[in-house]
Length: 339
Image 1 (cartoon, rainbow, N blue to C red):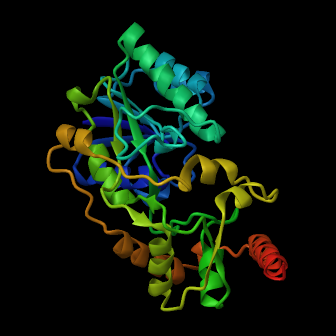
Image 2: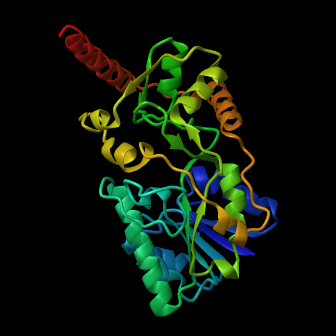
């Protein structure tokens, strides 16, 4: 296959790009070239800002592809731009949506592709819903060969999956565990969550490339495994070989703090229990199964982060915020215990 990825070097797309190359397909990456060195000499680069439509059109002149996948679709306007650029250039167009688009609060589980899309808490999710609506409209009215993919919480070796973290990623939470400091777990930690290793996502995604039965479809790609947030944080502590000192704080309280925008990422996403039904994906991609268990994937990621200084970005602002939030809850407990 001749495959074009817009982006191609992010958490999700890097694993997909590697698998496409391993399978012997011809891979083009259209991006600014900032991280293309992770595939030295193996990809054909189209260095261009996709948001500069005229420049992209010039760079793509005379090219045809079996599949175009845009990993950077965040608004319906970007989908419409892609339609203008690729209407006559591809047999399949894949847009990346998000499982955060599913209704919040959920009416029930398991979640399937027919679960309604509705998220009043998170603009990111609402934008992804709008992306999907634009894709469906183009498919229905113009025959644009669209496939919509819905990943959930997908991670790689560079960042440990967490419920609450600061602007610099996951390392500061690891450091708090190492230093014996308490870490915040939203809610009571018993809600179910699904984390998917990017190599598992890649195998599901690859099975959709050039798949005629996937045209016009929305397809989720996640692990079948659901674990609690308490388990996720315990897996991290075990990987660090340190005790876990957790403090449970209500998601609604965390969402009202001003320092971080947690309304969408918690109330509109991670505070909800999710269990995904992958029947549709397995029907389209026979034999697919996620093989990276949550505890195994977390251990490998923790080991990678701790072995690579570039992944250890300290975040003193987030560290201080955690201390303040924990202290505020302790003060409230002290007040009411004295009644």
